[in-house]
Amino acid sequence: MSEVTTNLKEQNQARKKMIYRIALMGVMTALAEVLMMLEIPLPLMPTFLKYDFSDIPALFAGFACGPIAGVVVEFLKNLIHMPMTNTQYIGEVANFISGSFFVVAGTLVYRRVRGKKGVALSLAAGTVALTIATSFVNYFFCLPLYEKVMGFPLPAIIDMCNKANTLVSINSKLEVILMTFVPFNIFKGVTISIVAFLAYLPLRRFFEDEKTAETEA
Image (cartoon, rainbow, N blue to C red; front, side, top):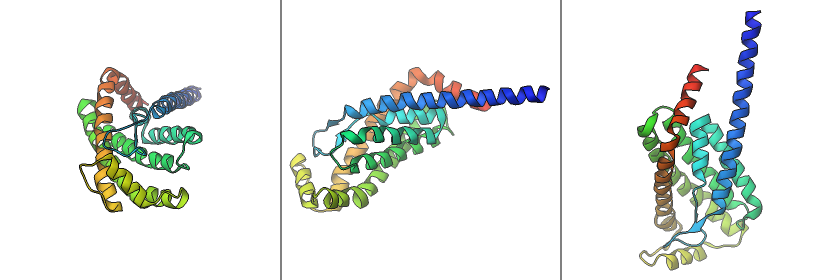
């Protein structure tokens, strides 16, 4: 009888945990989509590069429930955003890939090293992963597809980059990546990290309690 009771309790706890995770991912997805809609252009950057803070809710979902939860939030926010896109879904796919690298790298570090130090290390790892992943995604995926699918040729992209930033001279696809996308994503990763760290501080007890609950489970 005691074994049956124990099994029922474990099943009930697992069910509650699943419902909680689904609810949390839903809330984080909604928040991420709102932040994604508030995207803005940056000085010295071409207009097709937009800046937003929508990776932070996905990162926090990863902190609380694991990297898969963060990736799910990244996927859902981009799926919801697709009807509002003007990039033939190319931008959303690229955003999902790069955001997932940021979230997964950050979450994996945080789940090994907790506290303020863990958050700082996770955000640094996420920024590096974001910058590297986005460079490859744009070089091999986005720029070729913009040309083939949208009829947006590389010379036009180079011209937009040169007009936005007169401090450098860009003449090739590699230079577009190194002089435009890399600085943009480093800036994005660093500023998102600062905001995420400041947002983490008042929520620190919540994430610590999540770790305790996982350990007890």
